[in-house]
Image (cartoon, rainbow, N blue to C red):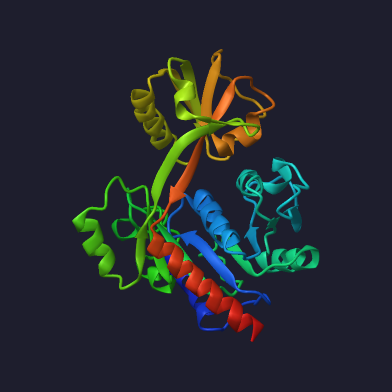
Length: 322
């Protein structure tokens, strides 16, 4: 109760301009959620960045760099070169940078934005995990919704997983539903009550990677594979791989889950010829383990979503030029 009230007070102090937000000279699109845990912010941020890049926009992702072993404002990548290791950037910003996307990390995303502008041209900033980063003015807020535990069925911390109260959704411009097994009528009817545009993100995994090469999933056919990950929800990843194993035809010899953002400085895994993990984990373990591959995980969104984003990107950049 106290946590919820404090979170509400903090937001209102910024939203009602009692505490002034800092504004960057270029538009900011925020990607965030209401709950703790994984809703797919990193693959969604990559999808959004690549969509805008495809249509000629110079983007830069601004991130806190959660659990990074560095301080201050760090230029991770200019989109061509990566200047630091994953320990200095954080695992998720490093993974974003591997996709040829400029990234800057800082506890102050405003300072991160200024650092980016000092080093390269930017048309649009993408604020990673930004729904609660009130200090920075956002032009457009995208709220990700985990279909397995949507915010309207949850409670604020410590009784649930919500960082803020349910009604905070009203500050979002659009809702993107992730982790949905199907687009049920019940779910669609509930989403309509929020009177916001909403879209379903589909998970696509048809390749694996070792960061040097990519292979089709049937590369795994007939192999014996040990599966591990360090995620907020390891069981979901394990279930996903188990389903792929049935489709492709490979044997899983075991599973092991580590805590989210596990650094693999000290770890123990059974001996195996082949290991399968996530890209976020592969970033940290690829030089410590042989025969390890990551499931290439991407989002696919409807054409209507792309059109809405591009329409708003054009509007925001034109306003900025004006």
